[in-house]
Each structure stands twice: as C-alpha cells, then as structure tokens.
Length: 235
Image (cartoon, rainbow, N blue to C red; front, side, top):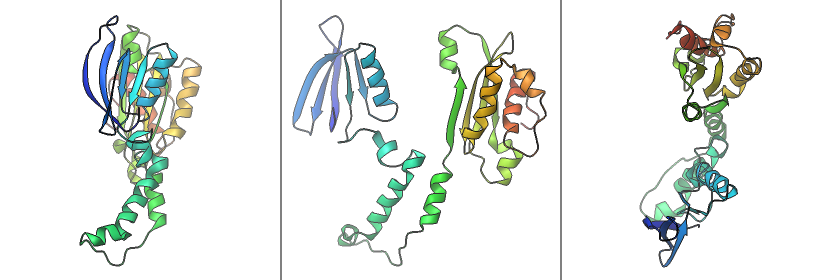
C-alpha cells in the first residue's frame, strides 16, 4: 500500500490475526486482518513482504511514499543510487524555488568527478556462510573473530578505513562457519573466504597462511587469528 501510514494495531478476531488501520493519502482508511504487517518498503521491507507472501502468509507492506524502495533506493544511501541524492541537492541550489524564498547562491557548479568519487567510496557489503542469528537459531555454540580496517596498514595508507571483517567459527572444532565483510573492497575479500569455506578450512588454517603485506586481505587473516588465538596481531 503506497502513500500510506499505519494508524493503529490491535489483535484481530479471526484466529488471532493482526488487524491494522491504514490511512492512504490522508483521506482514505483501510482496515484488514493480516498475518504480517511490514512498515516501510526499503530493501529489507519489500523483500521480507514478498518472502512472507511466498510462504503463504497474508501480508501487507505499508509505505508512506508513492514509490517502493524507501529512502535507500530513491534518495541515495545505496551506493549505486548516491547520485540521485547529489542531483537533488544541486537542483535545490539552482532552482528558483529557493530564490523565491530569499535563499540565493552564487557561483554554483557541478563537480561530476567528485560526485562519482563519493559514490565509489561508499562501503560494499559481502558475506558467505552463516550469520549469528542463524547459528543461534540452530543452537550452534560459536566464536567470533573481528578486525577493523582502521587497524589495517593498506587501508590506512589509502585513507579508506571504513569497515571491518568478522568471522564466525564452531567453538569446539574451529571450523569456519561464516565470513562477513564491510568495506570498499568487500567484493574482492570475499573470494578467499568462499574458497576457504568450500574446502572446510578452520580459523587456524587461514591464520597460519602468510598473507602479503601491506594488503587489505590481511584483515581476513587477522580476524581468523582473533577467533583462533583470541587476539589479532595489530588490534
């Protein structure tokens, strides 16, 4: 339901279904029973709504804006959409709308190269294997190894220290169960983790492999060392 807001929730009368009152366009209200109400149609919201519907749940996704995707897709927190946000600010600065309000600017220009650089610097996210939530649901006793990129020599040299590497491993066997990356080169770092998990590597296996220095890929070794030995070398 687009251009809508949820006004009220309460327990329904039909088998305990959730009942919600939704207002559309400020003048139309719709009331109904649902198994699941998803508020917000961002990358998490609409995907969850679709999955729930595929599983047979009566689902409604409520979005206050007239289009799906939420702020991330339509404004710019998703890296590939960052230029949308920049163009919006540029339009505000150069449009007559602000001038009519008494706000004036001089010498405004668009530095496309810098805008593109801002977009490209946005961190990537990559992972393989299990998440903490999945391991907890399965009752697996696990350990965590984490290493921030701010402690990585190559990342500091490149002034690109946003992000971290996190690994999850079986606490008893040390077998690698999941690897998670946030950073500008997450898409490159994930490959070593995929190979390691494919062949059933342990945290000790990766920690004992010599990695070239200085490289960002050392962060994966450091995270595995933290999980295996309890402490990374440089953190």
